[in-house]
Image (cartoon, rainbow, N blue to C red; front, side):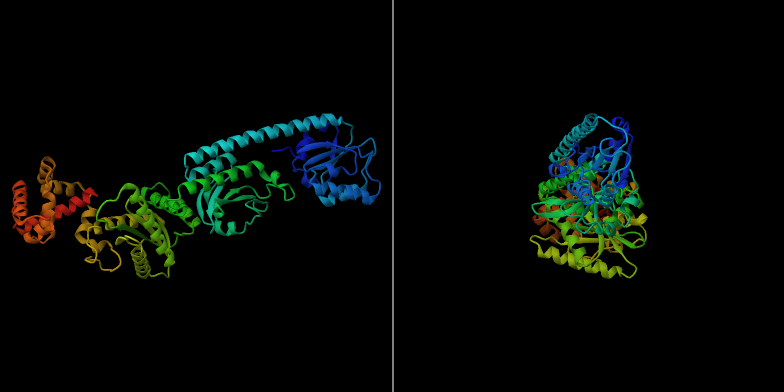
Amino acid sequence: MFPTVARVLELDVVSRGLPEVVAGREHLERPVRWVHVSELADVAGVLQGGELILTTGIALPEDREGLARYVRELADIGAAGLVVEFGRRYFDNLPRALVHAAEQRGLPLVVLRRELRFVAVTEAVHALVVNAQLEELRASEEIHQTFNELAVEGAEPVEVVREVARMAGEPVVLENLSHQVLTYDTAGQSAQVVLAGWESRSRGVRTNGRTGHDPRTGWLVTSVGARGHDWGRLVLIGSPGSAAEDAPPEAASHRHTMLLERAAATLALNRLMVRDRETLERQTHRTLLSGILTHALTVSDVALRASALGVPLEGRRLVGVVLRQRRGQLAAALEAQARLRDFTETAAAAVRERRLTALVGALDDEAVGLLVSLGAKDDEHTALDGFASALRRLVKEQEDGAEPVIAVGSSVGSVRDARRTLVEATQVADAALHDSPGTSGARSASYYRLPDVRLRGLLHLLRDDARLQTYVERELGPLLAYDAEHNSQLIAMLRIYLEQGRNKSAAADAAHLSRPSFYDRLHKVEKVLGVDLDQVESCLSLHVALLALDAVRR
């Protein structure tokens, strides 16, 4: 924010003095916080750092050691530079001891070959400094206002990171403590370049304190967390060497430091406010799974983001898995959300326990999805069977843990086909949800696949086909209309009768009705549909229609 030594030398009022840099040329980017005119040899005692010293040299020491000490004290206090005007003490050259000491300590040393009015120089530079301070104040107000609004609105991490990238004009990455990318914004740069080899690059950047700048990479890094518990780092990716190693901390990027720290505070605050929601990791996984299913993300984007998150997808076998929980009654909305969140975390815990690599996240209000990534040496059945066993054990250990339905799609060999295996697993889960626990016809005792759900699975695959929908209406339409008009439950009675294998006595008991009352309802069904429920073929057609109705409604 402050003018540099180089910028000061370019000012018209300074250039008239024919300035010439005689030492410390590589440090001309030091910021000038103030201009101080002094002829004292011990001026360092009244400085605070960042000052550009103007002098005629008239009172400087004459001996070599005295000149070296003068330069050393200026360098130690953090002076921006030293400007010596010819004409009073020195005329053509500065003492070699002074030049040598400045070069050794990296202190910019400038001579003015023509006399100047020092007051004009100080006025010009101080005007730049004051303007810089005003600009910094405006920037600070903008940053605080922006992130106050984001905090009040409970903005998602992706929104906070996007705003940091916009205001800084540089890529920004939010990572967890394992150096896996949670979300990022490239600020218009290539995502492949920004995220390439992220974990190894990030592990190589270590800074002192909660916020630090790494001159080697150009990264500005701050910790994210609250109440003594950090859970991530926010990284602003600048250009290598964007700040001199010997520059004071505020010179590296005071505005960017303020921006990054304010954003980190907003992220930490919002996480405390929404700690009952899913974790950032689950949220990121959910976004990727949703992007696959809805085509919202390209294949390359999915592969890149998943790899940055520690889930490589390219060159591996991918298996979609969908989990649902059987429950007798629908829970209230908030309770259902809490249960789904807990179920998702349980699934993630099972993945970690079995040391699998997978994306794990909620697909909708009822289902949890996984995209399991298997290596060439991984046995698919062993991996899935181990996961299913771990999941069931973890669910059973929980209070009110419901038996999960685990549905698995066919494995695919590329990210491009990931959607197919997830969609297939979803269809299998929908079909298997109505099977009673312990009576599954699944070939595997641990999970369902498409061949295991048989007719129900076929009907779910065909549920969008107009011919199937027409069939349902033809078989059950009159009964559905009768129920709607008379507020009756004849469809439910028919379903119970067929599910009890056409055993009327067992069906009456299952419906909690007396046998005469249940028989009367069955006669009403026959009358409305014009069928004979004693005929096996009629009952078979109606049973298929009921299964198809379930598929169409879901």
